[in-house]
Length: 242
Image 1 (cartoon, helix red, strand yellow):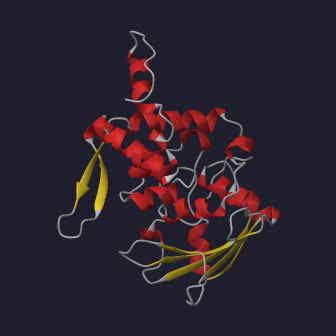
Image 2 (cartoon, one colour):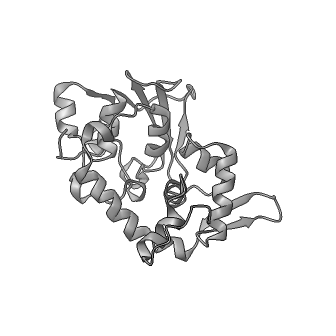
């Protein structure tokens, strides 16, 4: 444990000593979202340095929050949540619900990193809602601050959704033009899909089946599960507004 003890006879304080070192909860979120390799975790948490991530993973292993599993055949290493860490799911879900309801939308939506947004959207795509073939979706963000502003999602039945920041050379089934703040609003349940389409801040063209699928569903900001545990069709509509 690296956090200086509070010196209090308080279970909550003791929990904070384990969970409060910077990036610990975010790493748990990445593991919860399906990342298990070092580079996958780094990809989802671009603000953490390799040195600090290595340190945090070691601390979390010592605290019984994860296991480091090495494949003897390939030497590849996976980081897997323990049952002890999984018991935090309910706590983190409630913390996320509280944030959705009580943190102002302009603060929640202030980041404009399209790269990070699309990395998270990629693993939330619900393949069951898409046509049973390869589906290529092209996203262009007019307000991106990341090096790339155009991304392609390639979704195939039974396979992990691929994210490309350069043209993969496939025919595009669905074109989407919007802003990072608008798409982030959908992702976090902070923005109305119908209103964005109506006011022109979200534009789709292409395969009508994909367009129809993309408009299905509804959600409320104060009843959403933690973002990392949700699957989305692109994009999932909601009736809460910014």
